[in-house]
Image (tube, helix red, strand yellow):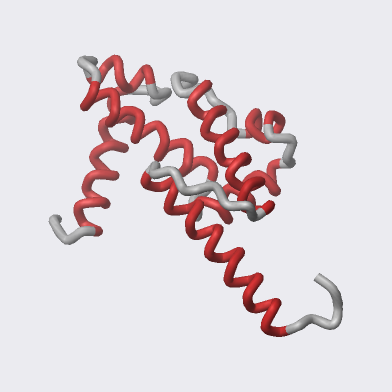
Length: 149
């Protein structure tokens, strides 16, 4: 943008960026694909999130996964990685990983004929107890948020 700023242009651009971020958050929270827009920032953010989710998928069963390895794969420093993930998803990288693992675990339990013991190992949880407690806490939180507690 050139100086002096046109206030209306600045407001429009800011609203557009906020709208794009909100669409990305919604897409990756509920898993429904958005239509690709021609906005360069949106394409870059989309590519970043796609790469992040691909890395999580590749390391889904890794119980000793270090999120710092993602920073190397994505060519970002740790701080910038954290900030970018937080800005796009409204979650920390660790929360994104846990949420993804939990969604995959639910998918395995519902659509495949596998036991809980197999699911917690397939999704990278360290123990069945840890997996069960985490699953229980998430279910209670979600039921509480929709008023079914």
